[in-house]
Image 1: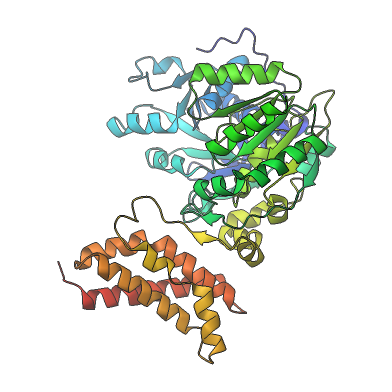
Image 2: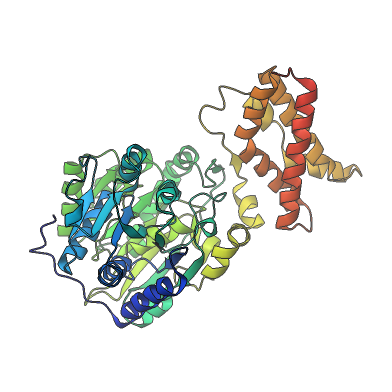
Length: 503
């Protein structure tokens, strides 16, 4: 059990009470074969809301509730809120191997990987679950748990209803999206601080897109680790945020450590934090940050979720991202409201505002839920790709299997433009691209079955190539893109079958 002596239950705001009622009504109305996704901006109180839903659900349905998280900090935070409102609960961590005492609890909180291991050994590890609540539901890792709870309702909660894996959209697992209050309405209602945004033009040439669709850490380190970008960061801070408690988000550890070194030389109070820190060291840094009024914390990939420090006054995005979810997660760390804090600052050093709009802007989340590909394509426009002159970066391990230099030697846009200039059909560029993939795979293996494995491993690169082609032509639809991918793969398989040894 979690000690709640110093933890005061958070009372629900009127809009949160309405949300609880609406969600429980949806579950009542639609029965057990129904999964609901709920969207609410960071800082809107998702934990408070689903904790109250848990309390009322147990009371009304007399079934157990399972809450899934992906960070231990979120598990502890949820457990404290539940205990404070009188819901007995148990955290299932890596030390919990069996649940002999499970009849003593009506609510369990589990890290997704730990629970998956337990369920793999025993499908009935937790009995009598009627509702599964998924915190930060946009993370794709939760899907592996759903197979064990097909007879239960699933309630996903997230600030951004876009899957972390574009090929596995959330509407595959959730029947309906319920959209909560917007950021602007939460600001107007006095629940969130407003943001003043400062943008600086930066040269991002050299960034590469990785297999996850975002800019790679290695290319970001090269861009943001250079002297001129470091100077621009320091200039922006000194112009806008001196004396503010500041969070700096970086893409790579090397960049963050250089930021710490540079700011220290200028006499600023700054510390670096990343995921390699021990629990003790991390707590020490966060305690220092909390207690130091004008502290600067430069970090990498650790404070986007499960971190709540309302006294943050400035957020600096010292990185570029193609993830709308990450964009909102980073900025949301500064949006907490305090009696003496109604506004915070955003310094954008990654052209992120140009890519996604201002943090307060209206977003049609229903459109994002129903048509995620179309929604993301409208955000990540052709002009964005051209600006960065992005290159595809192959996953680690693939370079050892194939000649990636031969693949890199083929530039779809250049080939397309050359064909048009010479009076040929631009569509021929797709055929030449497929020939390039064919030659690379044939060079790597004489076996047809092994060639098919390589073709599968190259799917993201094939899609990258075809997307470059569709952005070169004047009219293209999402259906046409899918048609090209299917045709491309079918013809490539046929050529490989004809050329290679059958196993």
